[in-house]
Image 1 (cartoon, rainbow, N blue to C red):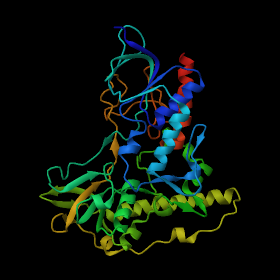
Image 2 (image 1 turned 30 degrees about the vertical axis):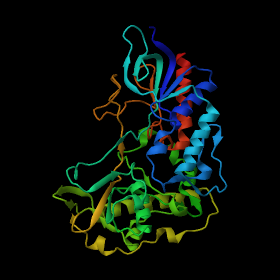
Image 3 (image 1 turned 180 degrees about the vertical axis):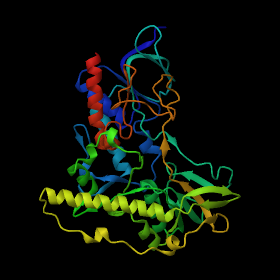
Image 4 (image 1 turned 90 degrees about the vertical axis):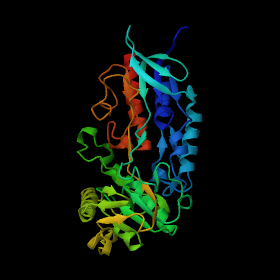
Length: 407
């Protein structure tokens, strides 16, 4: 039987794939979208019940489709964002097939283009846009791999009452870890937080949200080439009205801060002596941002109130001045471990030489050195803003223009 043909094949039916479809439709370019589960699947099955989006409502939009809201400064729930993406899918009306997984992608042997092996049969395409996002593989260190204690990655955490009784150890001090810790603490659970290097930024400063400052100073347009060596995303939260994450405040509220978990043996974690350094590094990044914001306000003559409270530093609690070096999970009554340790990509199904030794795609703004093969929806794809839900439209437009030029 003849193999199905597609001019452009988009792999992934989340916000990136939907936006790519929108941009191609605007240019009259034929395409097909494949989604292995449901539209916006990760928003359906890999977000916990109490998650709040990290961006204020006023900043959330997809191309030609702003986020509906009653309060511009509030933060959306998981359900709100899922409804938004689902409504956007209805608006775009993409040619999409759900429940079809791409298991292998290779170049055609006889002519330019690609062959995608799928659960619904092979498809040949002149162009392929991989829009599967950056959150493909939950990263869980092997420290407690053989331990019987209940363990869950942040992507599978649901709520405090669905965890076993006892204290909870959260490993990872990024945005997810911080928001989960606060939820557990407010629910009355005893919490330990293993803190590593992090990028701490203010939720609001001098009356404006962080996202406003990033735009006003042009930081969100920083090219990927100027990103620097750090791959840490900002530790910000939209929970409980949205406020600046301060780990010393967490400690004041009863959370025990720990250094980085570096080894384990028979249920006992060895803790690195780096808690003070990690907090100091986060504080330095935070203070540097405030200085930059102040300089911007002065340079542009902005009439903004001073904000001395933003620079206040709480005293170091005992868990910082006398940090724990060992944590006995059994003796300390810990009943669950939550790994808020991030994600990795998984492109093993791409049988084309476009991946580096770490398995990450090599590209420039989503364009690879293999004609017709593109990536979309990755963090820092072309600029900082690429990492934001509202930034994917710009990258999709660039790739659509590139595809149109090939056509």
